[in-house]
Image (cartoon, rainbow, N blue to C red; front, top):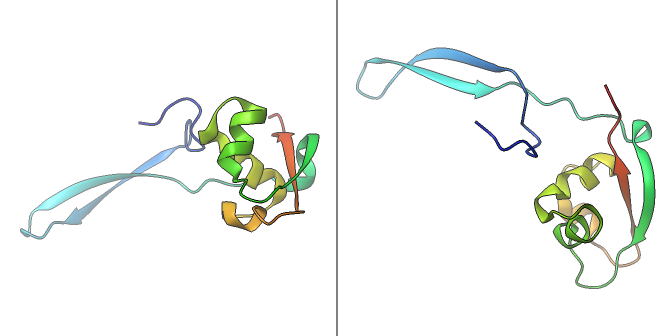
Length: 100
């Protein structure tokens, strides 16, 4: 369902039956809620001071080798939206997620 590096990879799914617009039953499968690890449980490798014009996808590409992994930086900082860490002078944690 998701690529191996997706934040949703490996999460359990649930299937529910709903009534479609045509009145017929329809099965919908969705991914269960992702529990975000606590920021203090991440192993911080570096703190990057954000420069004007930088975005988290730029940082993810530079430090993690994959721009789509920006969400790992968000998790380590305890923020939900990338733009919360894109102000010049802010320090963005580059970290490894907790194991287990």
